[in-house]
Image 1 (cartoon, rainbow, N blue to C red):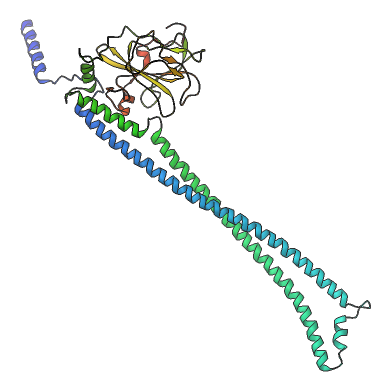
Image 2 (spheres, rainbow, N blue to C red; image 1 turned 45 degrees about the horizontal axis):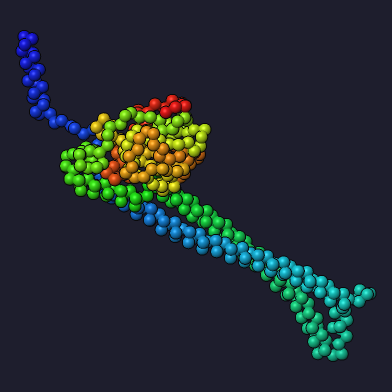
Length: 393
């Protein structure tokens, strides 16, 4: 019975070998066909983001134009209100002056014994015609002074109403300006979110196409993963780019401490290391080939190194350095000083930002897009021991 059970197990094993497909891909990796489709899709998404940013920029320009127009209107309102205030002041002074003039006229025609000079003037006429004429003069003089006073009073009220209307208009314009400023801030935030934490869109599109062109040029097979193809091509005897296996991993500085831990995709993609020596020399964590060095969009100085570990490539990225001492395609060892720790780019102080990935978007033949690069990050502590602080490598 035992013999039959063994034979049955062997038979089942043989059947599973023939009928169950073997997946040779590492988790998260893509075949050439999948990678090409990913690049097309990714490029389309980047173009959409680019168009969205362009649309936002156009809206911002239009809002700025409207805000400029409103500010001009507010300035005109303020000038008109200032002018009306001067007119009200001058008119008020004119009324006071006319009152004083009327008072003097009345005093002039008023006799000391209390008799009305107007009446004396009117009844002192030598004939009916003369009396009618004199009474008309008195009436016109009185009406003239009253009309001037009334006209000036009406002008003051008119100017006050106009001032109130302009003040109301200014409040409305101020509110409209605030509303436009709020909309501008919202669009600015939208654009910032699109750009947040990522390289320039044009740079990403260019890099993605370069990665795909490299793989196609090297005749990678449709069902072969990008990393497998790159490793096969570059490690071939006559490639000139083959790398010996690493002799293990070391810390990138002689002494220091961890200032920020790795949190992975969607968070902090690497680990931050600091030291009391703010310009301490930086070394590779393992032997390898320098594949890229550049300033990122924020101005951080970045170096990337490719390592051969257990039959596949691992990339280490060193960012925020103040100086670099190596060149692209230079082979480096764990004793090579590649640069000095610094605070270039988006940094709150001197430190080294270290990332480990299974592919790279920036290195020629890195085999992934920026989006894939983020997903491929590895906690550096998997390969390098990082205690809270250390005093040797």
